[in-house]
Length: 472
Length: 65
Image (tube, rainbow over all chains, first blue to last red; front, side, top):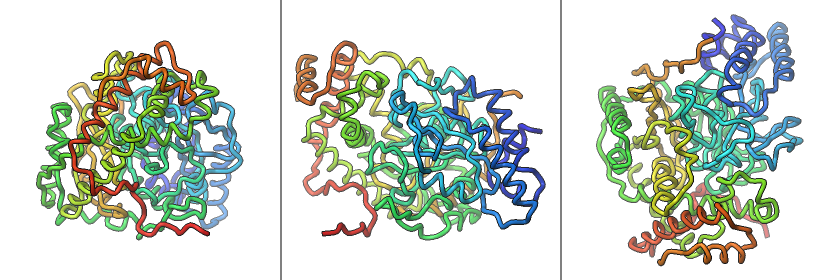
């Protein structure tokens, strides 16, 4: 019963709480029980705000008893990546360097979720400073809820785990080059990267200003839309944040009929794409065709270069932000983070500038395709979650560095480079029981159509309803 | 471009004010050479008319002054 309650979606829980069918305290206790049972193994959380959340849940219960008007997340426990500032709660960015950093104010997105009635349950684990490649996690090695020897994806590792394993009702991640979509894909959840600029980054420790965007990781497409509807829009601090064109859930239940969908052949049919992933994604395209969408292949030959182009640009931005600390306290970084940042700091400026031109070319190619199709379809990543040990092995050659860092990033980074929205949702499982992620890419500020396509697929399939093997 | 040696990479790091030695030096050398190789391939593309701006909203706020 407790587990069933915990696996409800945030929208369902909000409805049950509003109707006083369940108590916010009981809902919170359900998640605390699962955290107590599983988090010492999975390491989704850096900090659990147990007492404060219980106080807030009791207050939420009292507000309902008084029939006070309540917000759309009233009494719903959410958790956020530990990259978002939280007033009075330490915000580590997954680093020893920030282990004792306690912000005075909430990040805009956290403040908005709380203002909507949500209860901050805790802060979620991540790769150090939201860069990939962490070798030793100071707050525990995140483990995949489907197979604890496997990677979770990053950088929003804890957000992916907590959503998939029902350790929170909904979570917030941050997506620079796939950091919401990759953990969603490998953990079996829904991860949304909104249009760049739609969600303010104020109070979010930056990775790369030109591509960072906060985004939800949830157990349903509807929840992704619900959270986006709360966190989107200007806040007066992030100078690039802009107004949403409307409620992103406006077309959620319209179905796939009449949509045009382009299948990105350079990613689906790439030799890097695992056969199980290719088959699941092709079958997903057929499902959408059966639902009434027009589905055609589309060639985007620049996309396989996106991973290297992204890393040259994003890592360069990150290296600039970290340069002073790297020079004076370099030994306090995780070795994987330090090597990544130092590499970017040494990249010749002419190559970085070429990468900036290549970003424009990749963006133009993607926008050209999105002029012909409502949504593009591709795998979220080339493989299901790999073993943790494989990501921690030393790099011994130039070729291996390229394979490990550039190739898989070419699946999620095209949307990042173009600033367009993209979403990952479950589209199958391997024979070994690992989730496979389907990526949908939409037009700028057209999250409504992106969510419509995703919801149509979700409604027609059962993949999202599977639960990881985590007994009570 | 030619492949960078560890000594050259160490010298680059010193110029940037970043200490680099031991296992870090070997791995950064491999990583940097991977970047140089892959991004060097961009020279084959005609990017002359590609305006290297990041993705921005259609109406960026004006700066003052």
